[in-house]
Each structure stands twice: as structure tokens, then as C-alpha cells.
Length: 305
Length: 264
Ligand SMILES: Nc1ncnc2c1ncn2[C@@H]1O[C@H](COP(=O)(O)OP(=O)(O)OP(=O)(O)O)[C@@H](O)[C@H]1O
Ligand SMILES: [Mg+2]
Image 1 (cartoon, protein in one colour):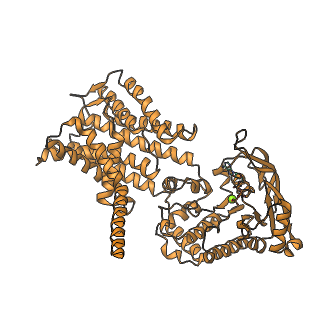
Image 2: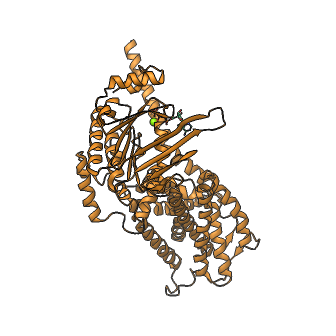
Image 3: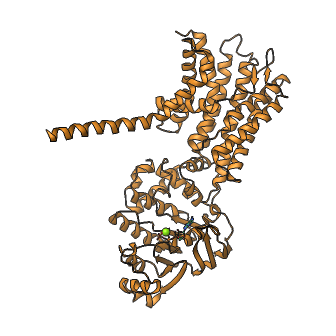
């Protein structure tokens, strides 16, 4: 079985990645838009955060990472709404462009180590000698974000954002620009993704230009796992489900590693998890058709006998 | 209230699918006028309404609403002055949100959508009151998701949402066509009730000739992108469905037997 330290570090990772999952939740669920900017904006956040850490400004790094992520989301939104490029392609284009941008931010280094640098996780000396400093800091950030997001989605602007994912035509018929709501949604989503990347960089003490690969799938896996296990009864429940889903995902991965799975198989496992979760409705459908066929066949046999 | 000057619209111009949907249409509506629109399939009725609503841009001509030239303004901006109910009951509401949340968005129309509370207690009381007008018991289901409502209930709700923040113009595109006869009648009744109580300037497309003559104060008939008949006053009062069909057949040169215009 996993030891306590492994569990704690998995939860820590889960809490930080939950911010990214909330971002994915906003684009995929609330806006109903497959935003693939995530793989790039996650690294962008990490890069900005790491660069500012090495300059001795860890907190500023987090703040600027947030802004940089927002900018990336804005670019994707404009590609889609102004230039009428399909949402999925808009995200891919931004993600691709970000690969170069991220390298520029990192001064053309593929990796920035943060060993012996001051980070926000080493700052809080008010949790003296505690093993839980990282968990405390990231949980506080996550809780604040979740609360703000919850309150925002309950405002008029939030209602319209949710309606955009449901029915764009209706939103426009009620006098609101869906270009604007999509812009706000994608800005918000990628700001959260970059925030997550920024925290991960400081937590793991490095930023790597390849650390975002498959991030959107990990986010989606967290959302789907959360929804399946914790339900979608109301908004608060949904947000909590995303967070718990992200933590659960990390625990599952840690468990798999513990069982001896090579770390290089991680992405394969993530893909399989998401595949399985997404295919549940189709598989269910196939089974029920099969059942009907079998019972129909039985019925006809009885008649012919 | 509404002045349409010689608007034309051709889809897919220059391709093999080129289709002239509207040809130099002019139409003026006085404040409070309720016009019904009839015509065969592909006559251009929906295109006319969609051009007014801004879903399509016109090729030529202009559209003036309440003294404002809206020819080039984007759909969402015009919507602040225009209420709409679509033929498809799925188009009018956000299905994964509650009745109250849908109404809150409609109620906020034209006001600034800020970071204020989405729904206040006072809003809820008002929404209940308005829902009660529909006489469908929806006021008891205010926190249910719209996806649980029937098509007719959704259309009634959409009608309420379209008229709630009083629009300068109400556009209805066969909004009862996909409903069962009983609930269709009810929605039609509610439509005429809201329109007459609020004195709304209204354009209603219908495939039901009887309803076209029964509701409103004026009836226009369209064919191949043009208005071929404009009836009001005494002339309209004396018009019968039979004569209307005869007129259509003589003007269009087609028999109506298999057309859904007859499915009155
Ligand atoms: N978006 C579009 N793209 C291309 N052609 C279109 C489009 N919308 C309508 N048309 C064409 O324009 C013509 C007029 O269509 P419109 O929908 O206005 O007819 P209608 O009078 O509403 O008919 P119906 O009674 O069937 O609803 C039709 O030939 C239609 O095929
Ligand atoms: Mg039509």
C-alpha cells in the first residue's frame, strides 16, 4: 500500500492541478467549448512563474502567470470569434504558438530549475517546520478560487456565461454578445490553468517546456472522474466534484506507480482513462441494443416453436 | 415603428445553389400593429424575419426600427429591442438551466449584465407572478431545469421571456408549428393575450390560414421572396380561407393540395 508521504504529496499535487481542472471545467462544461489552449497556457504559467522566481519574486510570478494565461485565452477567443476559426483549431493554433513563446519566456532553455530559490511554498515561516506548508498554501489558493468562481457563476454575467454553453442563439436573442461571453470564459479558464502551472513550477522546483503535454486530457479526466463519483446535483457540488476528481486522479496515478508502472506510461494511462469515461454512454447503448436483440430472438423462437 | 425599405437577400450568390430569398421587400408597421404572414414553403417568410432580427445581413435596402437604422447592427444589439420565439422549442431556452435562471437572463435584457446577483428574492417573486399568467403551473416548478419541460411549456416560457422586458417588436416564426394541437392553441391564445395587453408591434409567421385571418389586424402573403397580398381592415374581415387559397393558387400558379398551408 501507499505510505502516508505518498498520499500527502498526491493530494498536494491534486489540489494544485485542481485549479487547472477548474479551468478545463469552464471551457469544456460551462462554455461547451473544447479549448486546447490549455497544454500551452499551463507551461506559460509555469515559465513566467519560474523566471520571476529566479529573479526573487515568487508572488509576482504567480500574479503575472495569471495575467499571461488570461492573455493566451483571449487570443484563442479572438481567433474563434473574430476570425471565425473553429474552436478546437483556435486552441491548437494558440497552443502551437505558445510553444515558441514559452521558450522565449524561458530564454530558450528547455528547463529552468528552481533549487534553493525562494518560492511561495518556502515563504510561510508562520507554519513553522510543518510538513503541511505546501498543502496549506495551495489549499488556501484553491479554496479562494473556488469560492470566487462559485460567486461569479451565480451573478448575472455568470448566468449568461452558462447559457452560452447551453444555447448561443438564445443568448444573442436576449441581447448579449456571445463573442463577449466566450472571450470572458476563455480568459478566465486559461488564467486558472496558468495559475495551476505557476504553482506546479514552484512546488516541483522546475519549469519544463514539455510539462504541458496532455494537460487538457488530465483536466478532462479529473472533471469526468469527479462528475462520475461525486455527482452534478448543483453548482457547488459540481465545482467540488472537479476538485475531488483532480485529487482522486493523482491518487490513482500514484497507486499505479506504486504497483510498478513505469512513469513513461502515465500519458498512455491518462488517455485510456478518458477514453473509457467518454465511451461509457456508447457502450451502454450497445449493450442495451444487444439485450433487446437477444430477447427479441428468444421471443421469435418461442413463437415458431 | 418598423420600416423596411426594399430589402433583398440572395443566398450563396454566384454558386450553383444561388437562391433569391427576398426581392425588394418593403413593409411598414405602425406601433401596436399585429401582422400575420403566410406563404408556401421557401417563400422567404423566415428569411424576412431573420433579416429583421439580424441573423442574416441584407444585401440591399434598409431596416429602421423605432427611428433607428438597424440595417448593419449586430444581432445581439438589435435583440435588445426585439423579442423572438423560434419554431424549434429547443432554441428559445437554455435547457440545462432552471426556469428561474432562464427568466433572469431574459429579465436582464438591455440592462447591464454586471457582477450583481443573478437572481434576487424580489426577482423570484416577480417570476412566479409572471409564470402564473401562463396558467401551466410552471410557477411551482421554478427551480426545475428547462429540459424537464414539454415542447409546449417551453414555447410558452420562451414567449414570456421574449415579452418580459417589453420589446419594441415581437417576431414569431411558426412558434406553434411543432406543438400538439391543444397546447398549440394555448400558446396562440397566450400570444394574442400578451400582444394585445402590451400593445406589442408583432410579426407572426404561421402555416395556419385560419389563424392568420383570426389573429392580428393585418395579413400578408409571400411568394418567391415578394409580398403578393397585403390585407387589412374590411377587405381582411371579409376574407375567407377558401378565397385566400384560391388567390394564392392563381397568383403562384401552383396547387396547394399537398402544401402544409392547408393543414389548418
Ligand atoms: N441559410 C440559408 N442558406 C441558403 N439558403 C437558404 C438559407 N435560408 C433559407 N434559404 C433558402 O431561401 C429560401 C427562402 O427560405 P425561408 O426559410 O425564408 O422560407 P419560408 O417561407 O420560411 O419557408 P417555410 O414555410 O418552409 O419555413 C428557400 O429557398 C431556402 O432554401
Ligand atoms: Mg420558415
